[in-house]
Image 1 (cartoon, rainbow, N blue to C red):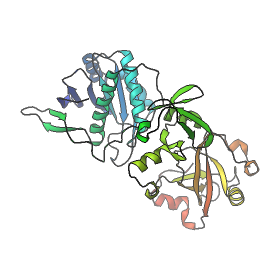
Image 2: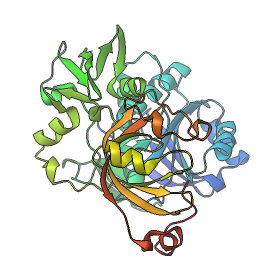
Image 3: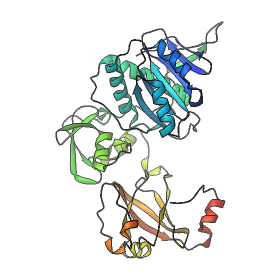
Image 4: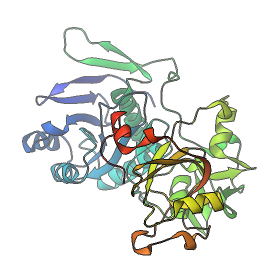
Length: 386
């Protein structure tokens, strides 16, 4: 799809508006603090009152993955009020709509956008709601348009050239011949990228006896039901935390993400692991010392998006109040415990069950006295470790 004559300017005070001369979508970028009833009423009068939207922290550094939430609504002000109460991480809402949209269109566009961003290398999607909406080619046009505008607003990256329009305060974006730069978003994963055809079998990374069958370029079948890779990963891991599906399924012994990186010339073994964590353990509830020293690998409840290979520093929150061990996460996102450590649990009332576990391998016991809570706070730790 080509994009022509898109005008960027400010309307309604501090609301950034992107318009175009085709019946696609107008875009409104609104700061959270500027989103008032009068402004939203003006926007709704210009459109059908049906929108898809993104919540985003527009000020996040451009060299980190940005959090986004994708939603749909026909009552924009009510949704903004709700998100202000329930989500504190966003400062900007980016809204797409026009007078031609129906409720079915909104459902379809939201579905396509969630699928687009759930495996993104630039964004972390914060919601997990999809739909069974019926799709058409026009809906793909909407998706491509929205993705291009979002890349421009979020990262300054676009498939288009931006030039001032003479004698106006607007900007015209016209289709560029050159491809996206290396800093732009990575194309959504498709099985055809790896020459994987319908009928091929994939195995789940945590259990090679759990398999699914490739159905088309984006979907698989598991127990007779269709899934995207991301949605199936979440079901198998028993979590609502969004997952990049290519990390959790193997084809011929390698994850789809590794296979894709290899095909693109990325040396996976040379990528420095920076996804390291500090977790807390209270020895009054769990005999951490004997568990690690006797078993070497333990199951531990997982509350964050720890990756396999990450270093996990364990902080003793009891009398020690300091870092006591370095471990390595060797298996992550397990839906249940597989290592029996009952004899090390001192107080089951203080050792709650979880729906996600990781296997931690002992690397080193830390002996330094300079790893106390006060030392950590002097070196940048904010708050307490829990």
